Length: 333
Image (cartoon, rainbow, N blue to C red; front, side):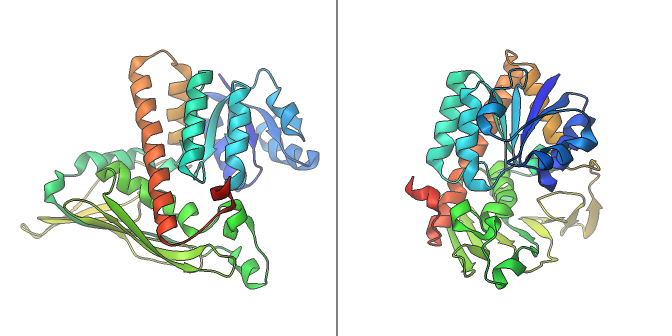
């Protein structure tokens, strides 16, 4: 049984805990919040847990072996570092870290402390995502792809009122690319590999981060365009273009529908996909298998692939952000 601690008491933490408990591989052991009442209210639906209002006490809970971190983006690095030094596995909500330097240090430190680091990029661990990966033809048969995830954030209303919520703040490593764009970059890098070059054209909001943007990932034989956004809504599908047809997905952040349009035969084939009610169940189950089998070579190879993918996605997002001139406080650390 994995003894789980949680940093961050927002809705996504609740969804992850619900998913983790449903696998029967985890139990909620501890919750950290600056306010005791908040920690208690968060844990109440899930049963008994310990509470901590300071991180030193939280990381000192000996029987807690794994920490899920869903605090504001800029806090992930220091909190993950403290957890690893306390010999806890860490599951860090996407985007895990602000810079490649932070990513490199956490990976090095986790290896040195013999614990695991996971980036909670749920779309990559879904069976539907892997099925699309298996269906893709050779790269010389791919013409390109277009991925979109654009959803209006209610917290943009606060920006319009002159405030600076974390998700739109450069001090907290916010913006559309860092939030929704992660899913798009994960799809591109997992399915096609590292691009040769990237460009990002951002529409900044008054706080200095991107409210939405258009990115180009250039490969040897084709391009992938991405469009993340948090200040408007898009109802566009995501598509992959082949020599002989087009694969249309409802999105790449959570693939629920996929249809292949065969140009040559003028046929339309719906691809059968399986999805979970809670979209975080599959990642929770995947992390549990690795944690439960620390010496199994099969899971060791799988884990190394995940870590390398997380590193590459982080680098691509960093390069995209820099091409648009978006600067975070974390860049100067």
